[in-house]
Length: 102
Image (cartoon, rainbow, N blue to C red; front, side, top):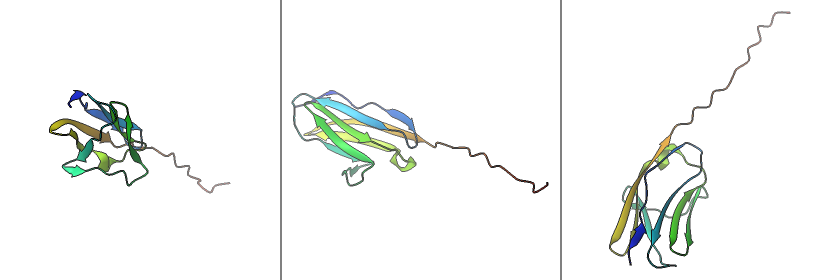
């Protein structure tokens, strides 16, 4: 078994949806996902691991700056690496000032 379509580096803004995707040679097999060397487990509702046939996806519903890192997918002795770069999303609020003059 081997990886037919490797992961690709991704860039996004904070709070956006983004996914890291790969494809393997045989359907319905389990792969392991890692971020900066630590296994990724879907314990947070912000992201999920999806499997559809040979396609495997790590889907972030709402990215945070802390999601930036190096990701790896592993199946058997095959690995694929990608970098996810989450950029800050500066939201500017207009503050209305009232001078209090009548």
